[in-house]
Amino acid sequence: MIADPRLKTWLVALEARHMANLTRREFTRAVRALSARYVERRTQLSDRSPLDSAGKRAAFALFYAPVHLLTTREAMAHLGIRTDLASLVDLGCGTGVCSAAWALLHEIPPSITGVDTHPWALEEARWNWRTLGLRGQTTRGDLVAAARTLLKQSDAVLARTGVIAGWSINELPKPERAQLLDTIDHLVGRGVTLVILEPLARGVTPWWDEWVERLAPHEVLACDVKGEAGLPPPLDSFSDAAGFRNKLLGARVMAIRFNDSLRSEG
Ligand SMILES: C[S@@+](CC[C@H](N)C(=O)[O-])C[C@H]1O[C@@H](n2cnc3c(N)ncnc32)[C@H](O)[C@@H]1O
Image (cartoon, rainbow, N blue to C red; front, side):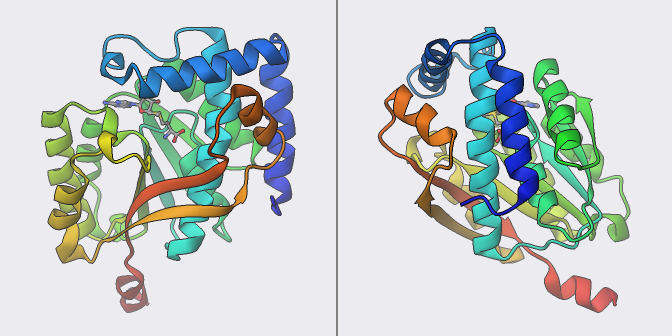
């Protein structure tokens, strides 16, 4: 299922990195515990980091991160998103896998800037990009402020910039999310290519329709993307061991492309 040799090599390195100090049993227990944090105890996310143990960090890096990378890649290919950009900004980058998926689809990989509040995730993002042969730097800080800072760039730069937020906007409090929508509306109006991914579960994104309506003048494309192939090894066996029933990749996606403006720039 994984044709790109860079991804195969990365998965092997990732497994060696994160299973070194854990048994398989400890790891699958951590995968389940992290899932419970995001699903059953998600109201506590802002008070207590879901990455508060070595096991959960390993589960995030070795299970959820590759699943997000493969889902993003599937969504990008499905939507035909632009892959000729000079730079990508990954808002709430975590381990940097969403921007990595996008960058790997470029013939000339763009430089990546990842923004997150979590120092461990940022270090992991740098390792992931390096291992995948990509160029990336990180900024520790608030993604809403980072998006606002992008407005200082020229239109020419923004027309060659992609902004991606994968599974991160649902973690923002309502007022910050509203500010981000204003900023994103301005950024895409000035030429930014945008991709937002969130879980398929509707309850996590009550704001989705409002965002789609607001971004409709920019010809936003919104859909559910569901992969047809199952998870590749070793993710399939982790998923089995953790007792998850759904083995398919999937996400709600919102995207804005600017192929025409690129063409008119010549
Ligand atoms: C579920 S994780 C997704 C990470 C990554 N994008 C992925 O798809 O694997 C959400 C990430 O958003 C980050 N995050 C949440 N609120 C944030 C904020 N206000 N500013 C920066 N990062 C934030 C968290 O630290 C976490 O790494």
